[in-house]
Image 1 (cartoon, one colour):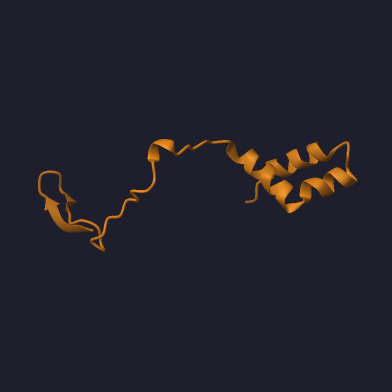
Image 2 (spheres, rainbow, N blue to C red):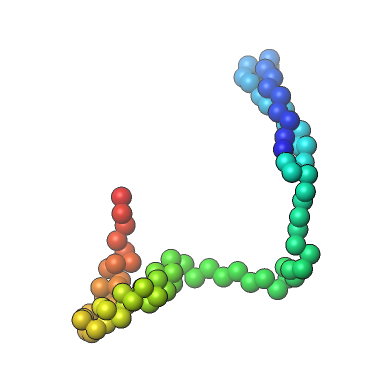
Amino acid sequence: MYEVTSLWDKEKKKPIQKRKYLGPENKIYTKSKNVDYSKVISKNHGNITLLQDLGIKSGVTEVLRKYFPLDFENILALLFTIRYS
């Protein structure tokens, strides 16, 4: 939480805010002491990996592979490029 005071800067002729940090809202700051953060790994594989995984888990990939065995990869690639406006 912050204490915010609005003031007028006479030199710059515009409003400014002074903020003072008061601490967390619930006065409880918990950081898990049981997690060794040095062993946490984060990897970025991009959107395509997510879409491939969703296609496999939903069964769409297998349906396309069954009915379009020669072109299923191209159809999936087209589906991945579709953007909704």
